[in-house]
Image (cartoon, rainbow, N blue to C red; front, side):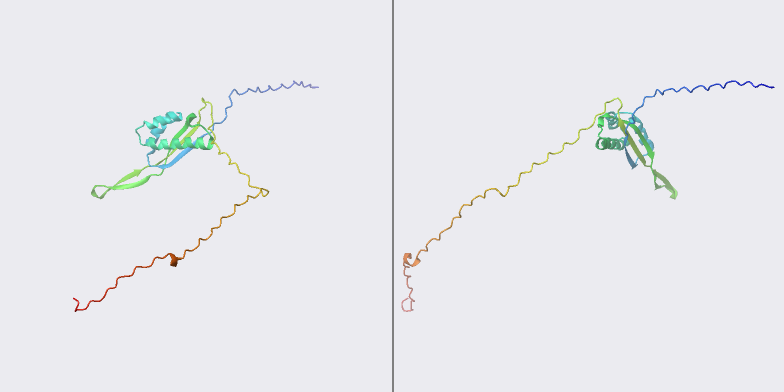
Length: 205
């Protein structure tokens, strides 16, 4: 008779759970502003956008103010619009913001032409771009909120006079007595007689 030996099943090793050492950070709120169909070449605008990416808002404004490129004027307008959106809609403080993203996309190209020699035509391409700037709260600065506008105080209503108040007696109106008329016939002076002018005849002359 054959005997079968059974060996106990080996217990599976328990999976070791390791706690992730990543620090949970709250998502930062991004506020953006976009300018579309700007009449500047995308390459020229990207050269300026690369200088302000990652900088604080006051520092970026200084860089754009002293830049000689024409694209700095358009990017400065977009940056000011993004800061205004953050202050008006989210209550952030403009000097505590950092530019998290600044990129330029390609827009439609306007095609024009120019007459050349021998009846030929030269192609002119007027390129456009879309500029986008995003700002977030600086993690190294303690966030502070802008002050809410002061609401005007409600005007105090004056109580209406009640019906039980004692009526004020009105002063009697003064009546004007007519003056007696003077007799003009008694006081009139007699009129002086007018000198009579006699008609002269031819014999009297």
